[in-house]
Length: 75
Length: 215
Image (tube, rainbow over all chains, first blue to last red):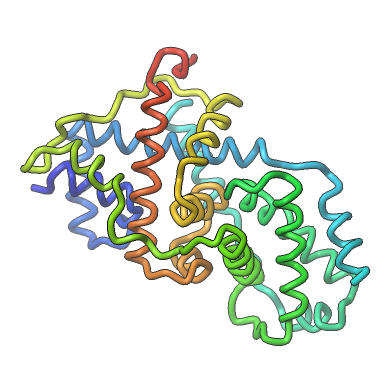
């Protein structure tokens, strides 16, 4: 049986998709049974969503492209 | 935010395609065709700007950096054979320019104190001794964006860059490894340490307290 520590390592390093079918199934089964590891998975998903929220807030001003094109065309 | 909404948003992000560069477009760029230059800038300036801001550059410095990226791209256009996507090429230039300005290295350090913090959460058998906090009824808000930005300031440049390319720009592992010029293993170490640092920081700032768990 895979340990919580190994599940945490696989989730946090983004290495799960590269694992064998058997290993991925083992992790999925572990997540279904372990409330602490499923909390970790939820935290990782939350950080991902928060990063995306940050992305939405970082739209900058509308003139960025025009300024860049103007400067690059003038060189 | 509900789990299904999170899955929906994640799926939408995964559907955003990376547009390959055509030989004709490349040739027009080499001739400095204004329309081609305009398209390259309009398609990529904003993601590059976001990444530069995500790496901690203030607005004006980030814009200077992005301009420098396009300038270098145009100067070295003859060496671009079109085998990789234009996006990968531009992010690669951004990565090298950012490291130059920060005088930093992308390679993961052999030892990092955050590894000990991670280890301290488990016993000898690999079971949790300090389990993750339970997050319920999450909502994406302006505050959580600012909270994670504050915590990202505490990340070493290499971990921050890996996190930004993966989670903010949503690039896949192969493309990120190409941009950062690191192995898949090294990228995994950077992500693991970056996320461990962010979790510790967010936990210290109280992301599981009622104030952050709004309906």
